[in-house]
Length: 54
Image (cartoon, rainbow, N blue to C red; front, side, top):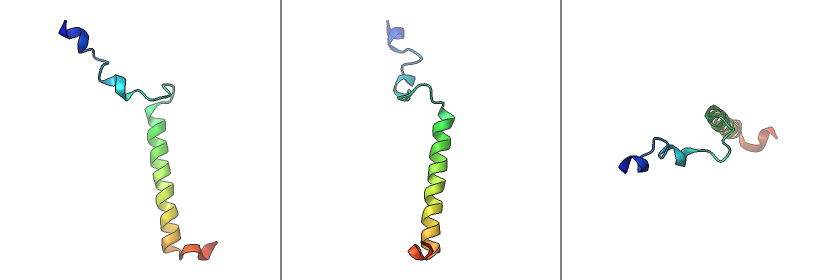
């Protein structure tokens, strides 16, 4: 009866996203793109002299 508790998808069940239709690469790309934009924003405002360009 131990086999019924150790299903192959038991570990994967907690990793299922809230929206199953969204592929993993979309989430990864969004995270990387968002992080890159945030870093670029911070660098442009710190190196570029703060609010001087606005």
